[in-house]
Length: 115
Length: 114
Image (cartoon, rainbow over all chains, first blue to last red; front, side):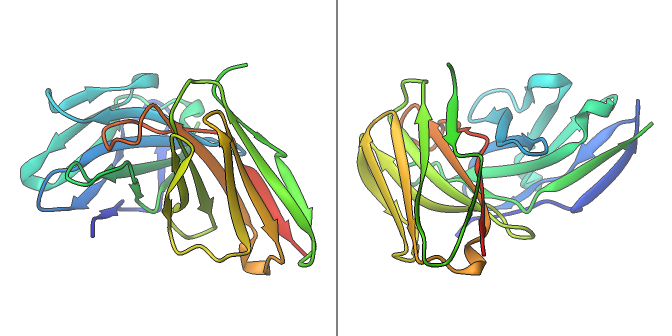
């Protein structure tokens, strides 16, 4: 079975600083990879996805992520944090070998942005 | 109205009540999902429907009963729930039931069991 590990359940960054959220997966075959964001009292919103092609993926709100097969990672970054980036972020994978569309989620990383 | 809409947003019920959660998607998608989000636990997939047929039941207790009358609507019928069932229930949809398709989520129903 696949698993997803997000290092750090809480991250605190200063406004204007780099945001780096880590995601590692365990799978012998690289899965499809997704990052979602959840603002308070809302559902999950897709930030970006990697399915094939260029390994550096750009998403909404200035976020990007890089798929590194050798490191089984898909870390999310944003060069300069805004107060509006305070939310919980989830990395998710789906097995490209399997029939269907079942996402396995990491435990989430809650981001706090300090003024 | 666009996206995935869930009603009600909040629900408080006793253990002996019967209630239903509703999800409606306006995206023209063919697959719909129910997830449970509890504090300190990863999101758990509960049920999946593809083209109105249930294709996944992830060992969910029978006190949860899904229904998908058409490709735009999904219900979760609840009866005789337990306190540990208190959680945020999220509905999602995707274009097809294929692993490279992103899922689009509603804002959830916050369920509290007294």
